[in-house]
Image (cartoon, rainbow, N blue to C red; front, side, top):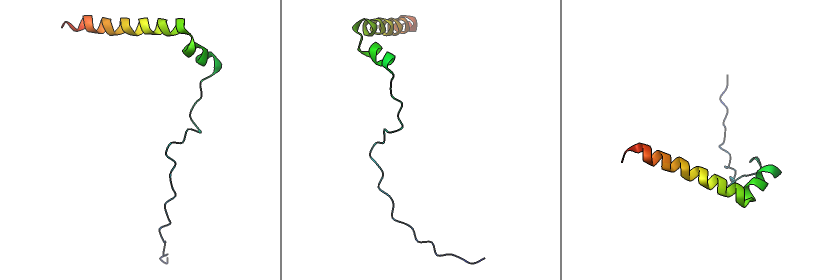
Length: 59
């Protein structure tokens, strides 16, 4: 076998952030995100979980 001289090629510039393959939310998800009643329900559920964790810690 013969050796080949392989010259390192110039590195290609990388994009800062490529979002072309990122999943996009559907219409149902977007409506739930912008619905104030849905957001309030999520807010209450999140606070309940946090308070349950704090109370169960024993401090």
